[in-house]
Image 1 (cartoon, rainbow, N blue to C red):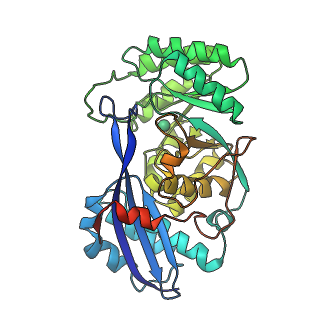
Image 2: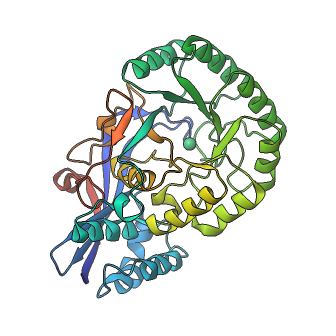
Amino acid sequence: MKIIDVKLQLAEIPLKEPYPSTWNPGNPETKLFVSLAEVITDDGIHGYGAACDSSQLLAGIWESHIKPLLIGRDITEIEAISTGLVNAAQYAYRPWIVEIACWDALGKYCNLPIYKMLGGAQDRVLAYASTGSLKTVDARMEDMERFISEGFHIMKVRAHHDDPREDLEIIGKIVEKAAGRIDIAVDANQAWFFTGKRSVAKWDLKRAIQVARELEEMNVLWLEEPLHQFDYEGLAELRQSTSLNIAGGEINSHLHQFRDFIKYGCYDIYQTDPTFCGGFHIARKIVGMIEAENKLFSPHTWTHGMGLAASLQIAASTSACPFIEYCYDPPYWEYTTRDIMLKEPIKVDADGYITVSQAPGLGVEPDLELLDKYTILRK
Ligand SMILES: [Mg+2]
């Protein structure tokens, strides 16, 4: 159970066609970034964890901070590893894949999927279809009919036009056409601003309140990331001004940010992502706080198949999670594109659920041959 080595592999997999995501406006994505951490124990176990970045920063502290923290340590010492990674995060962005790889190894050692070690609340989780680009009304209608026929109960669309009235008009038409057959959720992507080639209108509190009130009238299920990720007071005031569910927190990290969200009363649905927030150990503590507030947890998964696998494990560990994001935006973003680094893609059944794998650890196997082909750096 002792860790004898820990490795990092950065891969950049070219996408078949550029993806015009709303979070990187005017600058379509051309690659799928995978940072893969591998933990090896003296039992011959290999644990994996991966994020959706190409973290040269993490590579830069691998010898100085990550290896000394992990090598020689027992794989069960998750609390100490987690604390060490919180410190390492002062030097490098999101080292949490190392902690996720430890859980994968621990699950393989115990012969249990991670969700069963963290609570084991549900063996399947309802998936919602999450789109990530702006589309015409006709393209949205096509998406909606496909999602309904494939068993989805919820569809998420982006509101990211320069004039939110344009978003509201499109969403109004979708809701009307949905006619109760599928619920609609809306993601405003206002929590951070990537300096892309097209600037996007920033919402202030007044604008967020106006949009929220209109979406409330349309019976939209939730409005996601309506304001900046650290605008605790603004989010709290927005939430007080509408009965619409406000969702967010996907890019936030550490216990204290979530403690403050809860203290201010910012969200109804918390979207904590284990690959962004600090790993499984910290995510499970955050889920406890969310549960104590009687709020919902629904993890973000717009990373890739390895990230979805991690979010699925934390989702299935708790009864506070009613549904999980399933990133799926044909024709650009098929689930096979998202899961290209997995030997088997993660699928949704005809009822709209993902059945959690009973394989030990993360429950997925990375396609190491494919990752090797596109690797740009190893540590
Ligand atoms: Mg989102």
